Length: 39
Length: 553
Image 1 (tube, each protein chain N blue to C red):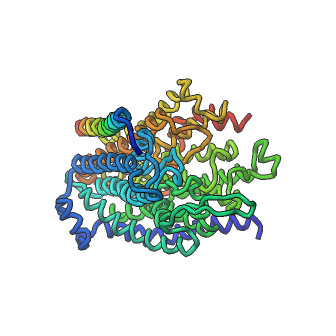
Image 2 (image 1 turned 45 degrees about the vertical axis):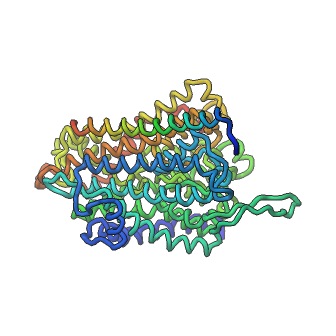
Image 3 (image 1 turned 90 degrees about the vertical axis):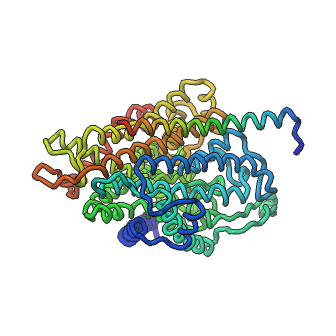
């Protein structure tokens, strides 16, 4: 499948955003875990 | 033989088989999780992974290992799903959208297996086998590992160490899940389930039309789908598809597989804490709630209350004719009482009160018997709450299995209990409050609300079954439900491991006159009561707006 440069760029930007979202959720969980240690 | 007798035999033999495996399987799991000996293959895994199998971890380290493993799994699976179109049909199929890949990756890593796609169209054989099936094994193993860490918290004294996450994960996968899966995959192939890498075939039907038949490595994935309480179907029709559930007796076997580990883990618990009676008390509560739920579900479905079921003489809509109403009701109960989410009939088509039972089963927190591992730690948290409440009522010392339940322990237990309802109710409320998301409902009124409530209940409890009747393959639903699945899985695990760490540090408290006996029938009744009352108080208003309103209309 041939993609225009614009669609390739969109592909990458969206994927980076979704991977960052996944990492963000886990970073949030790690912060909560750190807080739980102080309970 | 009449349908009623067939249903009684189906259910009776199922209960008997679960009772028969409870002891040997529970004892075997206890041995696997306590032995000092490492198999050669395990030693190779530890060497490759740089793991010291003799190094026990604190609860914080155990938790960080589990979170790191899960985070890498989600990212890997996301990338895998996005790249699958490069493998060539039928090994790979056209690319999944970003939001659907996020949703699917979160879904399989969290043991939910919510599917906003149809498997035969959206996934190729490679990602099914090397992506989703792998997660079916390891996500189930993660659940059991966390449960065992909590059990060690009760069993160990004056230590910060709860075991080694990597050792638990490896042993559970290789010694428990894999051998059972291999044996039953062969049985399923013998029963007629497909197991091949054939290209899709176009065949001419008797009616003169054409139909595309998909192949795939189905039988090998079907076992772990049930055994690991995963539930994600190879096909869109899930266990209603003849390639995925060939006969009535494979239907029985699938229900057995999805219940057997969770009903045996209380035995493992009893063995590890050194008092088998404690395990019997826990499995007693699980069994009582399960039998009650099956009875109510069968009653509602066979009575076929509602306009259409009454008109046609049975609640047959959405059921597979090979299985009939009673067996479908038993499957629906089993799949929602555990965190499986596989279906052999369509819950949206159930009678309003039958549909409510599927919701209620999940809302119970999936503790009867619950998902692999998650059911055991869920009910142990409820046992902690029960001991505390009993202590308040009768002036007993709040202690369970020789461990004092103080403010710190109760904070962890309370946070655990609040997390899932918050995710369910806030998620459903936001979806109902926004016109764009309401537009995804295919029904109006109470039934439409039930569909939205079911979606968030299923995601937050990591069940994965769908009520259907709602368009969830949108960016909003894929992302929102993906995040709810991640938080619904890992937030409770943080609190479970925190509680385990807090308990393991304590010195044992000797049994005294003030200690509540937790192996007697009185405690079984109290724990059952607390489980039901906590659910009733939390979810009753939402149920009243949905299935109860529909059922009483």
